[in-house]
Length: 458
Image (cartoon, rainbow, N blue to C red):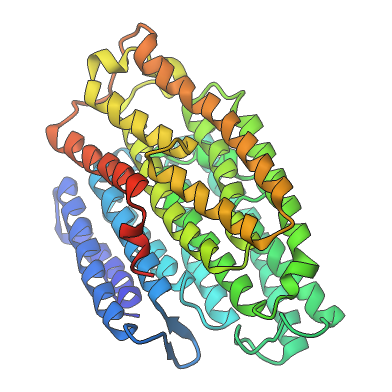
């Protein structure tokens, strides 16, 4: 709760700071300070849940899981501001507003892991979504940015209607918004509840870019300013899965998910893995490849929803860290390059060896190579599915798709190390920028060797 309040308040503060701070580069430091304050506030939340979860007015449930995810989200946002904050000025003139909107998104993210009823779920999703519609279209002179914003807004608004209809039907069938009192996991489902769950599932699948509701993702991510795509594709996506998983794990606690819904979610997972990976193979722009690969990564994160057990909770937390840190790092380096195609990376190892090395670590983690956090993240979510039973075919498909993903990630590595070129950067690379990237790569390797350093807090 403290993390939610601090992020929302600091978003408002940043809007006023923009009126008085003339040097727009300095606004970044206020934003970084805001994430530190939010982290401290989240630490106070952690003290409340040492002996179990705390429910506030039947609206919010503060638990070890929600506090840990908030810590992950705030830390990833801190890393994002430090690495990419200077690029906000290139996106437009209203730098303070961009940082403020990011804080509002972070406020919604902190709510996504702790909602206790469906109204709070709706608020969390909308608080996350509305600022993104704005950020996607801040480059008003760029038609692709305008298209991305309009497409995102129209699709998002349509999905919001579906979400609200699903919530209304579930309320009509159960008489409550409380996710622990719905009893959707026990007994037979009424046709009203069944329709509500289907609509709710479709809406959440859209938000996390699961197939066949992924069609908006490549155009929106590619058309939006790259600096904002870096945040949309990482922390925001992870928050969507946390909300998705919380709803299914709590509301289907009785076990009917296994018999009624597991196959449907498994098919969606398989389609997401196949579409995301095989379309990413044919992309020539690294930014668009990362957009399609985010769909593929969504397929792996869906395993946390397919498998309703403790292992999946561990897996989604570890995946949130591995995916967010690695993708933010890759986008931070991409922002420094003039050319976003694979050819733009040619010769990067000769010109900037540190950037090439950390980028390699990030890409290996995204591919799930051992000794990186991405490997254990995939291992945990896949092993959760194996424990659930009857999903061995899906696990085998996921392993094959992971092998396909290695191909397009290694295309970047090959370009950096084995192809001649200049790898021109749009601005000088500072020592501080390299140092933060090295820290991010260190986190990836450390969690790739000792994942329990993070999971012990669950």
